[in-house]
Image 1 (cartoon, rainbow, N blue to C red):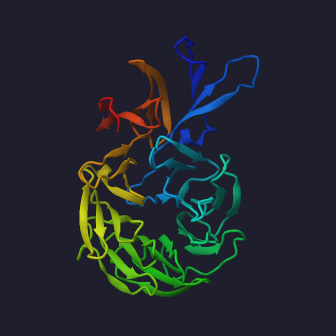
Image 2 (tube, rainbow, N blue to C red; image 1 turned 90 degrees about the horizontal axis):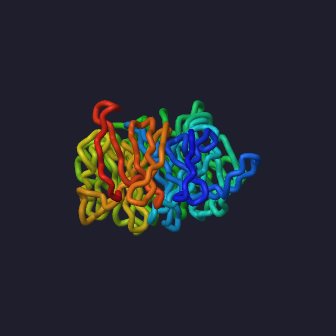
Image 3 (cartoon, rainbow, N blue to C red; image 1 turned 45 degrees about the horizontal axis):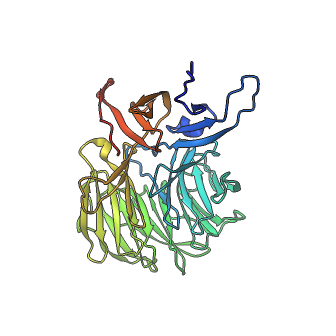
Length: 421
């Protein structure tokens, strides 16, 4: 950190801890500690965690980002690098980080019980860990196949897990959470499986979507392939059952969203007629009462749909820049969230669809440098990241209050004045 000046205006000694041991820092987050004192003769320094400035989701153009929500509706989670980030949905400045994966984490989902989270990484490992303790103790670890995990789904009793992705010998697996024993076979696809979901009411049904332009419908357990869904003309990016289990939908790179009967898999219709979006659809999320859903698209919009009439109630216009493409979404209680290619997390406002009522900013890549500055009696952290942004962070909260963004050249910056985001 270089030379540190000790003044009376600083309460005890404060430092932004940045090291290779702090996964959140490696992936664009900050961990702020307050030390109880300095003793150069002793290696034992007591400290307490004061703030976590969580990183944004790690995004990739043309790749859907899966957001997970907890069953109580209080938190949402996403991944960046080797970390899983859990944030309070009402106050996203409150964040927790899980850093035990040895490889890049790609997806994480809460169990319906809320007691555990299953997270998968690029090596094909699934880790199931505790959510009730601060230490997030590991319960089980499995390797259902070798290759990137792209999506995870639980049965409603939290006893079975389905995972899909880029396996070498197979593209998916279903197993018991406590033994790893197989409870079915996810066959029927010839290419990478992008998405999976399980009906949350009995009788259980499972649906998957793949790069082979098809969905697949399964009955179980044990889960067995019943038939293929061939309505899409391009990649199937997302499949999701409604909370009541009566319907499921598939969303594809062809801009279409199709609805099906949740029990039989029979096609019901399509949202928006010929096309739901002008660009590819990367994610969908149902309302808690199963009457509506939101969809996120590469056409830089999020749409709110009435499922009964298959019509769009609201179109949220997220911008005109390529970084405004929408690659993920989540409907959690009264909150409608979307994720832009920039990594920004948008809280959508139904009454003002052209402007989110909150946008969470931060870093999405490793932090290269930082300094602390006082302005008007308040302390701010200036942090520079490999993503080309300089963020200004308030020590009174857990998110960026302003951002300097590059214009064409990393040496030229656009100034955004101090204001809450």
